[in-house]
Amino acid sequence: MTISQRLFEIMKEKKLSDADLARGTGISANTIGDWRRKGTNPSADKIPCICNFLDISTDFLLMGKERAPQIPESMNELFEVYETLDKAGRAIVLAKAYEEQRSKLKRLSKVNEAEIAEEIMELASQNAAELSKSKHHG
Image (cartoon, rainbow, N blue to C red; front, side):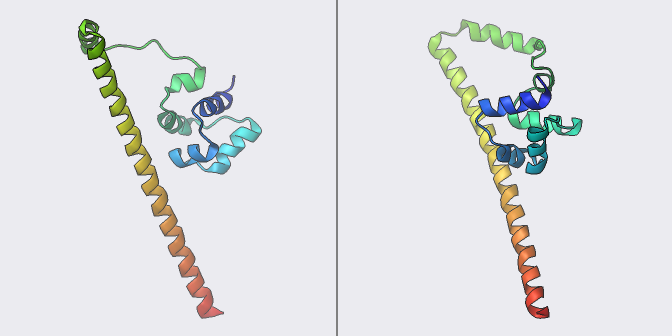
């Protein structure tokens, strides 16, 4: 499987459109469309941004598999404590981790919305200036 095939498969699994990827990464929709139509792969400079947006590792996008995780020593202690928790305690820990992840995604979404709104306002301002010029010169 090629990188672009894997990319579009992941997008399909996450129910993301080309437009979603474009908005989330700043990569033009035309470029993404070219990858899809021509079967070409994203350039190396686009890979980190794509992976960040999709919340996957570069290893997974490039090779279709993850490296064996390297767990820091401090995490081993955390896992040991987690293992001592009863079912309710584990549920609380997992719920908190889920909320943290949701909060992170909401912040990312708001950043993208703000950037899009800013671009729209800039384009509207440019269009208004062009209309104003054409009225004065026409």
